[in-house]
Image (cartoon, rainbow over all chains, first blue to last red; front, side, top):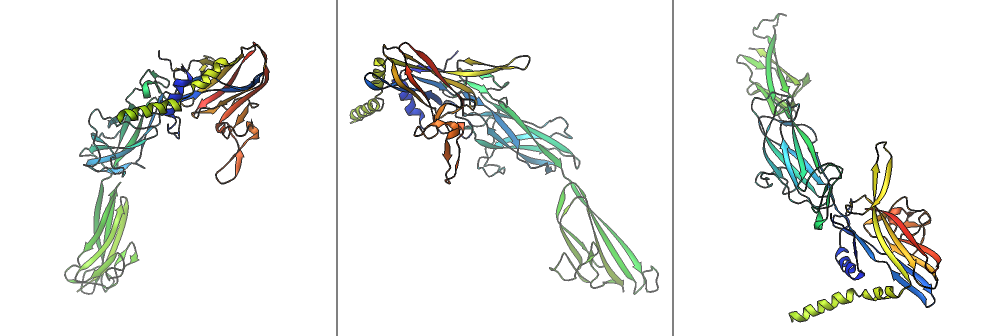
Amino acid sequence: MDTQIIKQSLFATSVVALFTLSAPALADGVGAGTLIENTATATYEDGEGPQTVDSNTVVVRVDELIDVTVTSLDSGPIGVQSGEAVLTYELTNQGNGPEAYELTANPAVAGNDFDTTVVNIAVDTNGNGTYDPGVDEILTAPETTQLLDADEVLRVFVIVTVPTGVTDGRASDVELLAEAVTGTGAPGTVFAGRGVDGGDAIVGATGADDSAVGTLIVGITSVDLTKSVSVTDPFGGTNAVPGSVATFTIVANVAGSGSVDDLVVTDAIPEGTTYVDGTLTLDSVDLTDASGDDAGEASDTDGISVDLGTVAGGTVHSITFDVTVD
Amino acid sequence: MNNLKKMVAALLVFSSTALPISAHAQSQSPVSLSGDVMAVETTVDAQGNESTQLVEPNVIVPGDRLVFGTDYANDGTEPVDNFVVTNPLPSAVRLAPDADAELTVSVDGGDSWGTLSTLSITNEDGTTRTAAHADVTHVRWTLASIAPGESGRLEYPAIIR
């Protein structure tokens, strides 16, 4: 039972005051270890004129409140494929004194379509918000942060491996738990003598632990090209004879939950046919034959080429061009 | 040279803490002041009724309530007049919102006084706003006279910032 009321002589408490004047004022709550000192002064008149008298100074020390919050900094599910993936979290010391936290990453959250394997937990040493291998410090077991000051924020990365053989669209959660090193428990739990300057530490509203979940979603994207042809002969039929016009249609079907970049569809002009100038279309919109002015270019010698750029899964594009049979 | 520095440092400590003088004055005074502080503990019974007790402030954290008290007594043989007790609020606490509305307070370090509702704060841009409990820097009580042998108690409630 340590009592923190300190009733001392004026001489002693005024010395203490010299060391507490520079205590920083925190935005949220006074810091652990802060001494609250109260002295009343009375003035009065008696037969000998005005007099002044001070009370004793009462001193109480603010104990350490242990609180922590963890949030996921990923704005939504992270698209992944087999291999390494990085989830980003933020840990905030919501208490009023310095505290370190032990971190645990749980890749086997209930409801997962599949489970990842945790490789490392790292802190954003250079503060740029991106995991930089070789730069950002990898915590070694038991993964414990440095002492964080009151209100200090630490960004944490969890690096996981996505197993092979996962199917498109499946999701997996990874939970990051932070527990105060001093201790956790129901709000109000007291750890005697474990606070700043030998004061007590008391568990705050968060229970001195918190967790947050980040989500991975498998985004495997496939591109399927289907080519078809329809022929119109000069006599109104569909025979391929000299002078017949053949219309080729190439359908690009991009499937999956991810997207593909720099998708370019090319096709050669078949031997024995000649490209009909100005017949290249993309999704029923005419493209010029010249290069550089739009997504397409076409010529009899080089064939056709259409640059679709980045295409999201679930998108279908249709390209057509005409040739005449020589 | 080193010894000289130490001596100077020692002299500085003594000169900056030359408070035994007021302690000496206190010993001569017919009036005594005795300060204390208690924490307010709120408990909820099985029926959900809240009750509060004053307890020793063994564990206190931001947001907790404290009651600072000062007992006064006139131990002399003559009455004393114009008895004014001034109590600067420790910077780590704010006056609790349920403090007596008639309490005389200052929000400017003790330069001007009044009940809280009559005081205002000048913002940095020159505009003014009504002073709030958190702005209070001092509280003060005034008693016209204390008879010989008379004693009493003064209290204010505070919340740790």
